[in-house]
Length: 416
Image 1: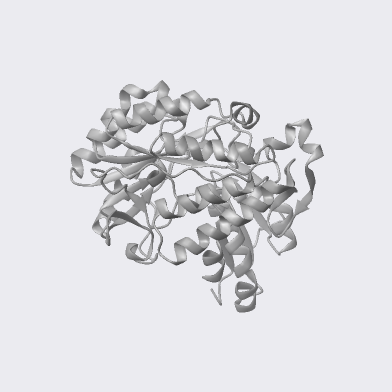
Image 2 (image 1 turned 90 degrees about the horizontal axis):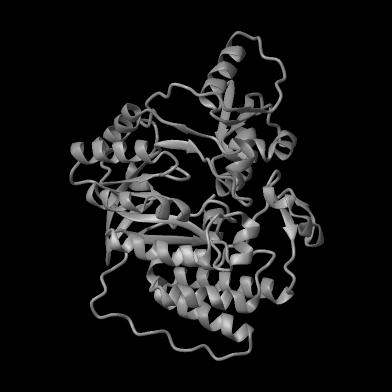
């Protein structure tokens, strides 16, 4: 890096962007003369701040061709100051080069039992998303478009990760069923070549129901669990987020997923401008009712909505009453809930989760703490949780919980 002429930093998620910005002083101290570029989903939506930090080229969308062109212009001394680029040009993908990355053992693992885990690889079958949920960071860049990665490239990428020790593959598509036919052909090829390997996917509630006949095929080809962005269980709030599913749809999707032999792994944004104290209790109660306590990563109970630049949330006229400016450090608009007690509860929930995880508490123990905090905020006594089933087996979970649009944890920041 010290002698590089081009330093390009990948910003696929909010946390990655925050951590990259924290690393910039070190990078610029090592090499202040390099052409600094930022690329990925969170590059263009944060372009103004990244420009202020020294970024000369900002690229989002299908970025590979644009990066190659940038490199060639710099080598040939033909670079001129470019505008912020969002490329949505369909391209021919190449097999990712992973040989210079850290060993897969350094990344998140899949916990399959007490003190047991397996090595996880990562790939994508598609990029972008054909949906335009209001809070989603994919929307300002892709605006309802998605792109298929050629199956031979995906399989070659999986193959090289298996050779490097991967025992499970996490498909990172924003929605694996954006192209359901492509998805099923892909996992069938995967299972034929790697019959002992397992995988997981992310699928929208709407797609879980629309393509429920395909869920069993996922299980048959090695899929263990499905991450699905539920976000809320209040139908009015779901409408504001433009999620295109309802509370009842969530319940139906949980049953459909389990009936197919898959484990549901729901994610939430429980703290948003419309959250109420009793609404938060209602969300927790539904998690209990659907027997999902072990399925929900504790951090999902504390996530506070981030509103990045360009978010469709800003289209809602009512947001004018709760937004108070843009926080450049946190890369999000500042907002306050209608009930200030909600922010106080969110802080307490977050602290309890952080403490519980540091002390090695399990998901049920942490959930019980959150359940009590929520009822205390309403000046109520928390009912006892239902007893654990004696025949329940451990729920599979990643050693680092997946979430895309939330603040980095204290541990992540400290790791810098």
